[in-house]
Amino acid sequence: MNLPWYTYVILAVAVAGYIYRFVIKRRPEEDIELKTAKFRKSTENALQGDQLFSVSLDAVFSVWWDVPINTLNFPKVKHFDDYLEGWGIDTKEGYWDLTEYFIKDGRRWYFNFIFNMVENEPEERWDDLMMKKFGANERAHRYLRLLRTGDALNRLKQNGFITFDSELEIGVAAYDSAILVTQARRAYSANMISEQDAWKVINFAAQLAVSHFSSWEEFSKSFIIGLTLDTPDANVAYREEIYHQYKQVVENKISPWNNLNWPA
Image (cartoon, rainbow, N blue to C red):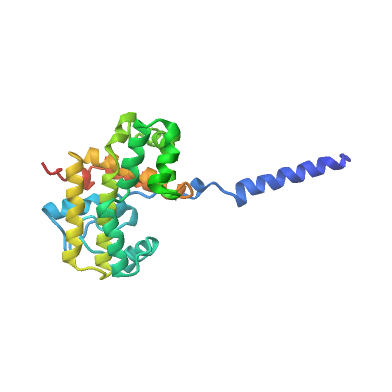
């Protein structure tokens, strides 16, 4: 049967659209590999007491990277090299510059100002206040967009991480604490810093956490709020992987967050 010429054009366009949509341009979430958390433990250099609690602040990152949750150091280069490279840490000086930033301000600098502004200032002042505080800082404006539109709140609620809007008030100090711990462990494993210096940083992270929170539940909510705000939109796969690991750390009975007491 002979069809009008334009029928073949329409058919060709439809086929090309299908190929582009489902073959060339796959959705990021279709490539996500959600792994079961293994909560690996080492019998060598195993930590106890306060040290084990402090190291456990980065449990989500530990299970995602598939490293021991009960030691300070990692024996395999792949467990720290790629991470440090991803953060642009290739020298001792570079590590300390970034660490000092997270100790002094971290992502708390963004969240505390922006959240308080959204809660207490009229919206017509936001752009001016943001420019005076952050200039054209891309991360700051992403935080504002996620808080202004409610996208961050919706993601957290849809995943069951929080229930009430007011829970955002808990802030992001836990995220900063976890980053400090995970970076110190890797810098020590890479021989960038001494064991003594690693514990100084990790102990600060623990004090930061304990001074802000009274339970693992509070800490966990703050951690996931920080991660949600800090992850660029382009990193959908990474965010979903971390969400998956986070749920297991929160829910699994063998997770350190369910076995270690929060300091009184």
